[in-house]
Image (cartoon, rainbow, N blue to C red; front, top):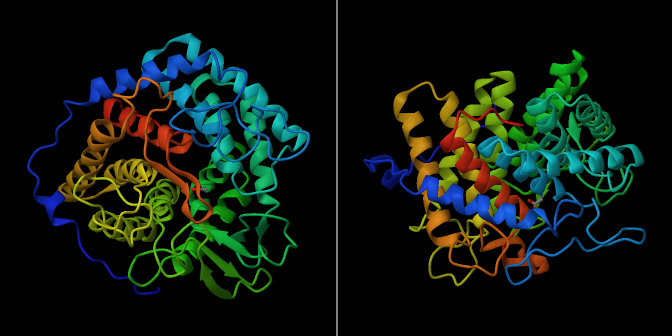
Length: 403
Ligand code: GLY
């Protein structure tokens, strides 16, 4: 296997003596207040990917035939996932009923194949329908999620062992291209094998995760955002960024997808290579997290750079660290992962949440969607809100992942 450097743990986090959960109940109360406020506007319509001036509006169509507030794009399920988390926290049926309206919408979406030509079916159906099935036994949700898993499999190049991320499978600009984010789409496939007994989904997920491990991670444990393979032979070609600063820099959210995605593959396979890699990626991320606990949008940047933070990257990394904490064999590793996650989530609540922004209907400010495209820069975004709440739920309960 390729040798990947391990920088070691972040010593400031390692030596911190106390894990402070005093913020947790207040943070959860605050989040639930915001979610409840959004129920009226966003039960029969979906919010947009990001806020504008801190406020989510109804989702804007980007193609003809799409309706404002419709179920398209890759992020609608984060709002549904927030509803399921809120239901778990409160057992309040208002949240469940709203989430079930969404399940109907996701069922229709996969049957009619509305904006399904990408790998993000994992994000979409894990948080909307696998969650519904796991929490309430909803068989229609299970069926919709399995249809999504089957459709995701149409993007799998078996010889190469990769799932193409974006675009038409014959588009030369996208053919054979994987992106690190896809690690979070794999749990849909692992789950599909668990519930159907058919190994093809899990085999594809393992092959893809191994290729990501081999090629998308660089020797210094930073990551490329995207990587091209020859889809016929599986020959690795080259890495390229899409949302990072440059092809050689490390996009913070991409690294965070790896910090969470590899331990999820470990959870399903128990292959130690996935946990070893997750630890190296986490060290790289935490060693480049500035003093206030929240990363800049590309890990090239630090305090004084004048660049924006991406709160969503740190929220995702916190969830990954909490997943890693579950699987650590030694006490120090468990404590380190748990403690680092708490430091991040506390910083997010105290300095990045909307607790002092009554005009905002989001949970977490100061995220970045895509700086090179000037998209959602220094705004809230749906995935940041989702992972922030998932992190809080993980601290509060023995949470069973939807992933
Ligand atoms: N998965 C797309 C993104 O993180 O922006």
